[in-house]
Amino acid sequence: MKVKTILVSQPEPKTETSPYFDLAEKQKVKVDFRSFIHVEGIPVKEVRAQKIDLKNYTAIILTSRNAVDHFFRIAEEMRYTVPDDLKYFCQSEAVAYYLQKYVVYRKRKIYVGTRTFPELTTIIKKHKDEKFLLPSSDKLKPEIPVELDKLKVNWTRADLYRTVVSDLSDLENVFYDILVFFSPSGIDSLFQNFPDFKQNNTRIAVFGNSTVKAVEERGLRVDIAAPTPETPSMTMALEKYIKDVNGKK
Image 1 (cartoon, helix red, strand yellow):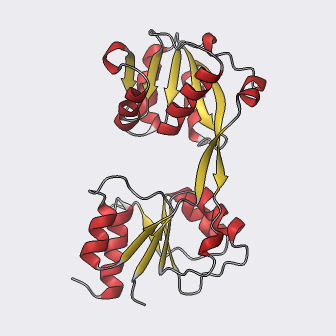
Image 2 (image 1 turned 120 degrees about the vertical axis):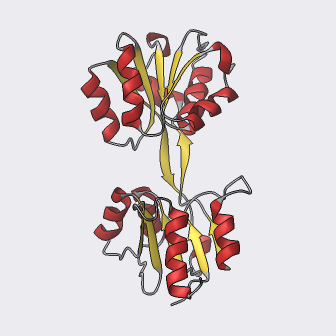
């Protein structure tokens, strides 16, 4: 069956140069965006219950822009003045760049990984005397504490925000040829919103092994998977599939 419509379970890109817009134009398909999950801040009272005292830490490990936002939110709500000599360890350049929303970049000690968390640990390893705080969501990737424990550094996890299922009730009678997922949480949201969901002719595209597993555990079929050596990005995987089934060159 030909593909005409795609729903991506993420917010619409803010940049006009997104590859999804190129995909829609080149392949003449309609691409919509909708967050299946969203993030909510954990109240400061619950953070205090975790026995988190921000002044006890000399370094912050930041794995996402959400982690940046909620660290500074909690600091403000706790009336904690973030010291100028606090060290920031950012998982990627995108996270480090986002940090400029809150601090004067050139006046801070900021260390940047290349992309993945294991790559960041090679930098953390060189600063073993620091007391690290890891601002986290309630759904932390299991590899992160494993990697930090391997380093034998002094670190503490602080749950500052949580992943929440979005209300998708307005999509109940809307059907797409392809649904695109990037996390197991997105699959959970699908079934919390639509407990009787049947895949039928809907194609499911997934990114990452954990998402593949979540789809299969629900008894669904994975039609498009990324990353692969041939299609390292989701848009490349979608384009290849659409060309195959729509017969476009």
